[in-house]
Length: 156
Image (cartoon, rainbow, N blue to C red; front, side, top):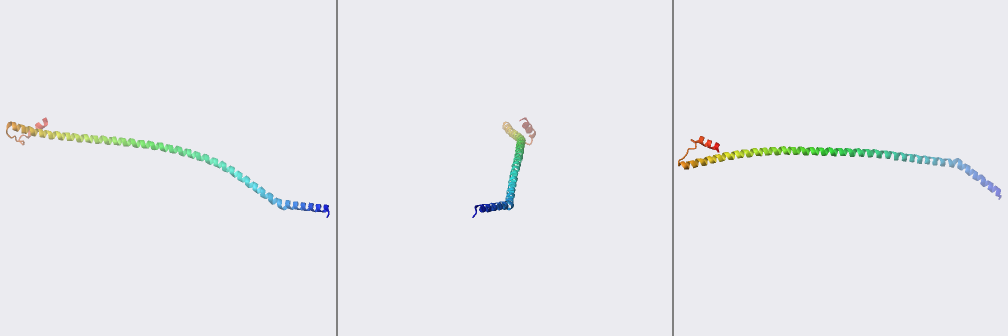
């Protein structure tokens, strides 16, 4: 075996293998690597867009939250005002009702005092008649002396 022929044969096989690899194997590998690099670049770009959209969404959410918080505070203040108005109205109504009840009680008391005075006058007139009857030792006719008795009631 000749060393030069072996070396020459290996040299030819190596170049044929290199040519075959560069012609048929290398282009699909490069195409796959380029596609993969493009997918990664697109993924990174999408991630960046997602981060930007996430930041924008978070800003919108913070703004909405602040708006909702402000609206909630306004509603609480309105509710407190309404509650105070209801309390004031209830106090006013209760005060009016109390005044009406006091007025009715005073009127009732005045009527009872008037009735009691009338009853006392009648009793005093009866006692006066009995006293006068005993003093005079004779009977006084109440029907005949009704005018006298009514004057006595009015004086008392």
